[in-house]
Amino acid sequence: MAETNPSAQHFLDLIKRSRRGKFKIYIGMSAGVGKTFRMLQEAHALLRNGIDVKIGYIETHHRQETHELLDGLPVIPRRKLFYKGKELDELDVQAVISLRPEVVIVDELAHTNIEGSKNDKRWQDVFEILEAGINVISAVNIQHIESLNEEVKGITGVEVKERIPDSVLGAADEVVNIDLTADELITRLKEGKIYKPEKIQTALSNFFKADHILQLRELALKEVASQVERKVESEIPRLVASRREKFLACISSNEGTARHVIRKTARLASYYNSKWYVLYVQTPKESQDKIALDKQRHLINNFKLATEMGAEIIRVQNSNISQAIIEVAEHREITTICLGKPHINLFRVILATNLFNNLLKKLSSSDIDLVILS
Image (cartoon, rainbow, N blue to C red; front, side, top):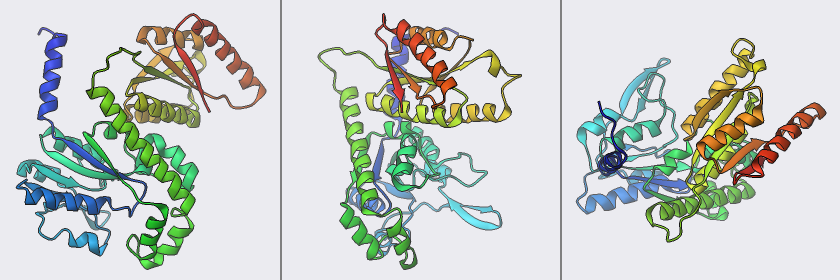
């Protein structure tokens, strides 16, 4: 069978894109800013204008003003499942696709589905619905974005377990920030509009501190601004051609450093709307028969994380790490190489310095940038 030529493939991609549903995401700095409320308001507006809109999944969190907005909106029944002796419900993806509404509202984009579901994550359910040609409106909080995980933990002290790859936001046709000031959000919390009374004081003492909210608000505003900038760059042709960025994240079997490098590089690639790769150079001491099982497991998990975030994984075997990095960078036409900062002990610093020196010597005659991620 003959391969599809580039021009034909481009046309096929355009056809697929036109058939795919449109995707709108409401994003906020935290729970309680009004994302679900705004989605339901939009659903009513669409319904009044003759659009076939249905509620696929909404979580009102027992907030009265939000719950009241469900009145008059057609709701697709949820799928019932039994898990560990309890009856639980999930978004019924097949029912949505069978009913084929013009627009479906699907809340809690970062939600993890019950074990045994077709897809592990709700964002994967949403992509399936989009591929069926149905438009989706959804919502997520800034702390659920994968590449911001460490930054959010640094701000709040809480590691968010449910996360979405940055590529999910990148796939959205429209990203809208629901913004409140810190004072407005804290007032809503104290009035019982976010959590039940018994949870309010704990929330005020932890996640909902004013300085935390301000920093999360800044992250949300920056993220939406970046999304708009990327959309402008991709849709409006530039008069002057510029260098097309390609990032190479170089990781080792060190779990923490590797995850940090992956997330930081993902942020850079997302900002520049660029292709990026993750490179692991397997040296003889980490060959299949010598590498510790825990390191092998960490590597596999980090490869999975990087793939979910949109990277292409490259694994090579070489005793000379710097040489392997240069060869891959030249072959893939990389513009920026990203490395993790070495741990501070003498032996590692000596080794790392040699690695950096070798890289710098080889990169001095090229147009490739080297970034050390702290």
